[in-house]
Length: 345
Ligand code: A3P
Image (cartoon, rainbow, N blue to C red; front, side, top):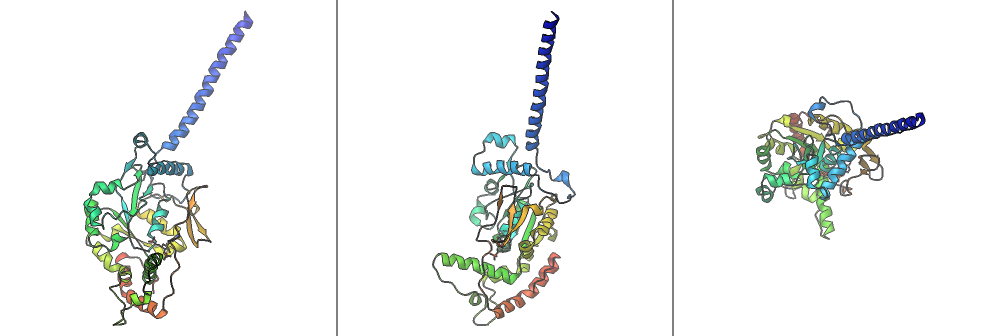
């Protein structure tokens, strides 16, 4: 009898024990899942910016995974609803400058867990046909994101297109505007190189840079040449300043972004009121490519496409000097307005 009671007790203890262990295991698994579903770094609650640290990889992987599925169109409406994903209008736009390093800047900012990029240049504000499609069309071009994340798009043509400042102002008068600039003559040559490559691809011939940049009749700088005009940064900025106060712009040094990107990215994080999350871990120099590349996590890293970082043709030094002298007064004005000085000649 006593033996029977002991066996029964042992049996009960075993069942209770199993239930307890099961519950603990369930809780551990559940907490893990919930942790992954936590919104990533709600921006407001994390200010002021903390010390630089690595992006939490698990969070980042989850974000990338889900957003990647969405981009491929594989995510269901249920997943979108469940994770409270939305297509948000950009809170910041990289408005230019063409060949300043706009792609590198966008891709590098996208390393931040609170940033989601619009992959393509949308050309909403500079293209009349797109603009006529309305703001919902624009929003529909935006990637899915968590509500606390900010969406950023880049369309460098915005900087030089007359109608754009007013149109952006009408959408959001407090939007943050990023402009990435390079030494103006280098930028003009980079611009030329891109067009030249396009012509060569179509087996077409093209003028030499010198012929385009210098007016044959006057021997002065040809201000009708678009690559020259685009590099007169202050002229374009002054148009923008009719709509937005200077505090709403942040100037990124495109030459420094090439050589040493992290400090420039940290300045942008601060400007966007984001906690400092992009670290040296996320950026590594690739000697073959000759540029910094991006490391998202242990398995996923990438360099920019080969069309970024072309070899420039050699330009007659006297033409370079002429251009540098031409840009000089405009650069001074640009420094004065923006409060950011560069070591441009
Ligand atoms: P070059 O091709 O003249 O070297 P954009 O994206 O606005 O078209 O700018 C292109 C420029 O971005 C390139 O100009 C390149 O120098 C610069 N750039 C900056 N960081 C880069 C990076 N990490 N990888 C490749 N190109 C980068």
